[in-house]
Length: 230
Ligand code: XBP
Ligand code: MG
Image 1 (spheres, rainbow, N blue to C red):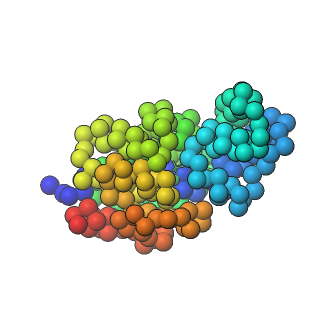
Image 2: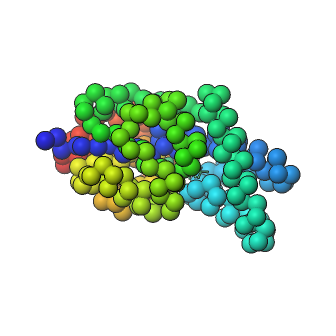
């Protein structure tokens, strides 16, 4: 029996480069379309990423801007829906790229018979078309999104649900993440975790990673198997 049964992939920031020129642009369009004066520039948006989940990020930000609770509850669902619509348009226009080297790693793992899974707390309406377009959704044995796991990372419920669906012990699976919040979720579910940070997450405290690599070019299927066997 191989010691590595499955690799569980985060989506935002890991399989895809989706925040700076993706979700951020879509949030700004949603603000504009709603006639709201807010705009998220590239650097401040990096700070806002510490709040996982689009609705949660909007709520946190608008609270900081002094918007009344009742108004926040009224505007956030509509803003988030519009953000997701615009993001989906960006996906369909081919504007959201895979992270360099990630498709090659997915191919190599698949060829060596490892089960693949998607574990994100992003919204299913954009996660599934995006993964399908860039990787092929059918290659992933399960795809957990906010639909199955509404409590956002670092809550481990998305990983718990994936492991349960796969019928797997966490000791035989490895998670691939890009951020501290994702790393915390994976570790809380008892998984080993490889972190492949990006420009937004490189400065975060990632010390709990079992393996930290600079980019997917430095991460092979063999390295993940060695980690699972260690
Ligand atoms: C990703 C997120 C998501 C996206 C927006 O974090 O925080 O909220 O920014 O997606 P992670 P939704 O990679 O740790 O899952 O608007 O669909 O929530
Ligand atoms: Mg991520």
